[in-house]
Amino acid sequence: MNKDFIDALGQLATERNIDKDQLLLSFEEALEQAYERNVEPGKVVEVQVDPESGEIDVLIVRRVVEEIEEPDQEILLSEALELDPTVEVGMEMEFPVDPERFTRIAVQTTKQVITQKIREAERAVVFNEYKDRAGDIITAVVSRTDNKRNVFVDLGRGEAIMPPKEQIQGERYMVGMRLKVYVMKVELGSRGPSILVSRAAPELLEYLMRQEIPEVAEDTVELKAIAREAGQRSKVAVISRNTNVDPIGACIGHRGARIQAVTGELQRERVDIILWDPNAREFIRNALSPAKVGNIDVNTETGEAKVNVGDDQLSLAIGKGGQNVRLAAKLTGFKIDLVASEHVSDLDAALQAVASRGTETNLPTDDAKRAAFEALFSAAPEAPKVPDQTDGSAETPGETKGETTVGEAAGETGETESA
Image 1: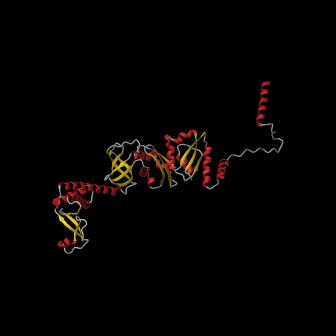
Image 2: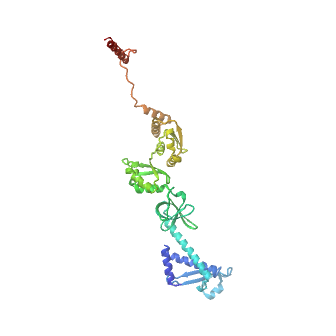
Image 3: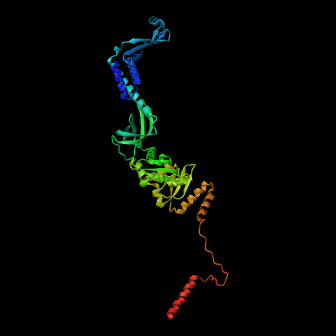
């Protein structure tokens, strides 16, 4: 072994992004394993490689004992004293071995071991590179697919897998295609690091909205909740921290420019922007839009909500394949039960809104309902007053203005006929 080998080892370390000292240590361990397995089985072998000249030293290590129990690993004190008068019991002695004793099988074993060590070092580098990147958005390149519909993407220094359930429905992945992915988790297994990425995670939608909408990036508009069915439809609940900023308008942009830039990255996935409300009833009502619903009964203990919906709005509230109500349930965190009714009027919605306000002011349930009902009719017009009958000129109950007019009209008709 010479300096050319050391230079080649350094070049290999640079190409594989591996530490040279670590690679040299792995090479020494590979030589030790090969020598123990094929040349001196059962003995303790130590290999040392000079990092400058490339010279190799192979040593057999034996422990000094008074009575031998393992002949391959121990040496009697009397024999050790003949070689070195300063040795004591428990010390270890090293005996050099000619490196030329390496057989062809030993060299082949060394090659296999060093290859395995290099792979382990590469896996460790990849794991250390991405172990703290879980939860980040990374731009990746599609490298290959398999017959199980798994998509493998190149992250730069490592490869990640995107299973079918984490893909956008209907999206086609071609080799060389660049796309943004969300790193879900990074684990180190027996076969190396396992990196799981997703295109269906709600976090990807949140990231894109922060990139395209300045108010969201500056936290002027807060994203309170996201419910997503990748490739089809999503609902995002937003609220503004500035009373002068409309959160829905800020997210949509002029003629929908901002939200279209977001959906363009997600295969034109439909994104509904919903106004978040601290009142659970109003939040559920907003989440079920575009359907208009009536009275909503919320049970915060069980996490269930019973929503009355008119027959003409029921299909809209359910959505295609139950998508609208399913997303609303994910967004609000309530189990929503839609109850069909023949008709839900504006009066029902108004009663519900006033009752919600009454509940927020800690009114009892009956008082809240009574206050809601009275509030609706508090501004009703007063009935017309009956004129005071203070003199004899007042009309009698039997005489009405309409009747007098008819009688006068009849008299005039009779005079006309006589003429």
